[in-house]
Image 1 (cartoon, rainbow, N blue to C red):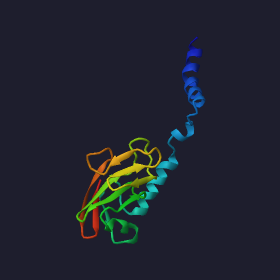
Image 2: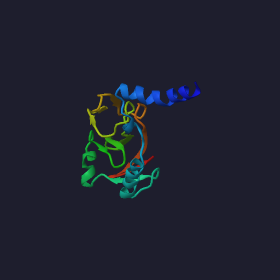
Image 3: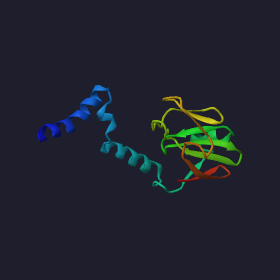
Image 4: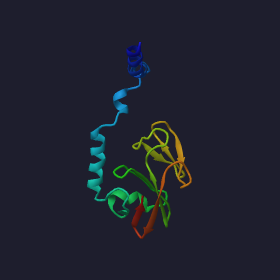
Length: 144
């Protein structure tokens, strides 16, 4: 009887998940995931949780020179939006709904995740994690 219980406890969860069409392989974390993140950090030249400095006059960040300009900077997993001449707001680009980072749009006041069309305000009191940012000329410094 104990062997049957042990079998049911270990076998039932994968069978139910497979029956519902929930892929088990995608839900598991692998060593490759952590290697990809480590490669991104080494390429960008800054360690996690250290301030990040960006020159907005460089071609990659030119959209942020104009008020209303925005950018999904996937190399650092952040969304940037120019609110005014003196302010750029910086948010984590992880969607609070599903955790996606790659499909964002911006309409002037809200970010919308393209996976399920959930919208999030561009205020630091909203659902997206907001980081401290200071702007001096065209140099933006972000503190995580």
